[in-house]
Image (cartoon, rainbow, N blue to C red; front, side, top):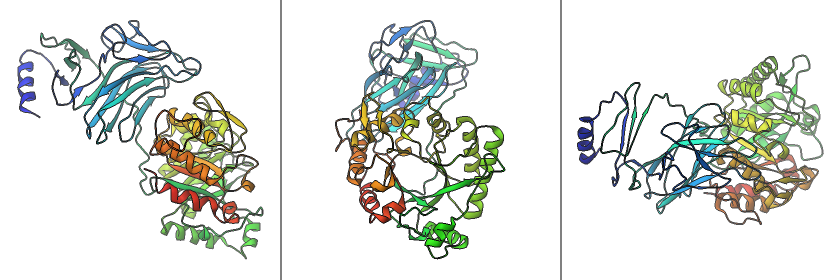
Amino acid sequence: MTSHAKRAIVALLSALSVTVGLVLAFAGSATAANLVTNPGFEAGALSGWTCSGGGSITSADKHSGSYALTAAPAGSDNANCSQSVTVNPSSKYTLSAWVKGAYVYLGAQGTGTTDVSTWNPTGGSWVQLSTSFTTGANTKSVTIYLHGWYGQPAYLADDVSLDGPGTPPSSTTTVTTTSKTTTSTTTSTTSTTSKTTTTTTTTTPGNPNTSLPKHVLTGYWQNFYNGAKALTLAQVPTTYDIIAVAFADAVPATRGAVEFNLDPGLSSQLGGYTVDQFKADIKTVQARGQKVIISVGGEKGTIYAGDSSSAAAFGSSVSTLIRDYGFDGVDIDLENGVSAQYMGSALRTIYANGGKIITFAPQTIDGQSTQQAYFQLALAVKDILTIWNMQYYNSGTMLGCDQQVYSQGTVNFLTALACIQLQGGLRADQVGLGLPASPAGAGGGYQSPSNVNAALNCLARGTNCGTFKPSTTYPDIRGAMTWSINHDATAGYGFANTVAPFLKTLP
């Protein structure tokens, strides 16, 4: 703490009767301060803020003071309110705000490093959102923003703070006191706030599993023979970081439970591949740095985990497979419906029992809105979810995040649909692009591996885009997935040999 700040605190404490929680921000100070203009909307107007969708000030419901922001999403507008704030290069900042309403987002863009956001999944009461970032070496301003989500009611926001080095707005000198009983006033301040709060945040840390590369290639290993090249698990090349074993089987007698049975047809194609050899191969590829997960579902999979008993059976049986075979986690590839509540509980059981890599492979229709069950499941387990690898094939046409219609088989289809998940609450490091390895791998939607690389480049760097270009870049975009490794092998590994090296060039 600087001597200037120490003297100021001593002088101020002599004039205040405060029990706990004193936080100071002085105009003109170069120390940590709230750099937001009109942070509590106490100007009685949107001074300093730019809002789409009819943002306005309300006195009917606020977190503190006399006013708060209210804005209502409508149509393709998410009621975004933003402000450009001057910051220092190579400096750490904490962004926070009090919000009320479901699917309210708080974030910062143009940080020069990794853009950040956090969100509130439920309405009904005021909660505080908080996130942090470090500015790039040449960054002198960032854009902070709040917005709701399409089809949701109006949201409220109040007491926005960007705390870090810089010069706060000249009109703002603030003393914020958090106390059970005391309201403080002083002639040296222009605003005083007394609050009784237990602070609740919805900041979601990343999956703590750090054993994977920043950008990864996932592929499905077929536990059946359909004409694509049969492979032992150990024959999968190291270009694949995650191998998803497709698929576990439902246990007919116990709803929700799954088991794994090495397919006799595949075993015959491989000259008598045994379960013991398969287990040994899992250890072999893991020793090479690859991860092996068990996938459940697929086109014909009818596994149900939609109530407490079936979810418990699912969580317990997958945990048993992880213990018995040495799998690193589970892939959810259910095309017949999921339950955010019950499957979410099962996945937490699996994670606690050693299944640290959790991936999803939803169809494109399952990722069009945060209102859909698959998307809600992803958000419900966001803190333990490794990757959402959406299947960008067998889809026809779909809406992008700009509400325009795009056709499968194009770069636009990949970027504009990935944008929905990236804007809908998933972190960039949780989003991957799922494509067929060859035209034989899907009924429709195949596009060249070079197109996949172009889409990844567009999302990560904002270059090589089609006609759609995201409003920001996502350098942490996780990577790609393909169906299947066997189809890729049949085609000479054109997918892995093109996409895997490119992933290593991403930021």
